[in-house]
Figure 1 (cartoon, rainbow over the protein chains, first blue to last red):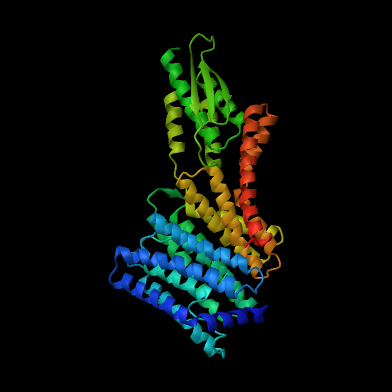
Figure 2: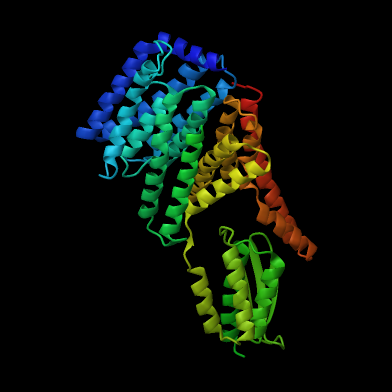
Length: 233
Length: 255
């Protein structure tokens, strides 16, 4: 199972590395535009990019090169669901890709983290093409998380929850497929969950119960359990 | 006893019973509580309920002065708190001989209390589903996947409900989303992946309408009991449709 997993990554990298560089370049340009010269067209373009990159993972990574793995069709459907969440965002304006000034440094760190994937693989003694790259599912999920964190005035909560789900899968993959690089996503996702949920709690304008303190404690407790599972993995 | 007084009582009891029925209280308790308030105020109350509306007649003991009202039953979220507090209100009205104004004031206080935080509900429902997964034999990974799959499905349900989408469609979509997320456990080769898949939709099971339907039928409120049963079974069918789509895509490999 582990060998099939790494072989499919090698096939994918060997065949698509030029396209991966193109997609990464587009992501870099759009991110820089949104950071320094935000404009409505750039926000729309970023959402279109998110749809495209999700579909890339669904159809190119999982359907074309990951089809040798058991139940790869499930992952195709799941990444189509992520694409759908961004498409829905595009249609309804669910998120705004605007900076709020909160947790921005954390967001920038997460945006850079996908670039660390190949270096970690190489430092582990792996050789191209059998290495992780920024255009693998977990690194793409990490980039999405970084975008949500860096531009978090109003986030796409659907996409966030799906990425959170993916990070749980990533945690389990660390042990099952011996891919410690995925610890980056897991480590980034758990604090993000706390930050996003606490932002959403503070943003709520209605009186609710239980109190903010109780809900915050619950969220932190859940985050600690998830972190415990990651350590155990 | 004046006509205005009777109309005032009828208006209040109509509001009271519509809130109770809307919040998922079984019919015999609603009828009993409404009659108790009527007794406390010195009037007779007769009630007929259906799934969407309720009809009540309030009259003096001679039946000479009366008022009849038909009210729509609003669709509130299930609230055990309203159930308990509004039942306690009927006892307070009876035991303390409260005036209509005092009862109305207490009623307004109860219904204006803050509601449960949707994020808190989201987390608790997800934890509950993860616990179900454990009870059915799921391992830690199955539990975690059930937890986040439920979060996605439950958030979908909350979001679509806020957007006033038809609740049958909400159930189909939520069941599909939760089960497709949980089915990712299959790709990881987790031994208890199928338990995660099966338990990911349990948060949608309409337990309260099913129990209420049964209680209503056994208490003799056959019509509304059957209505509630049919409604609950429709929701169960919707869950089955959502989950079937996932199973057809995943287990039968339609893709």
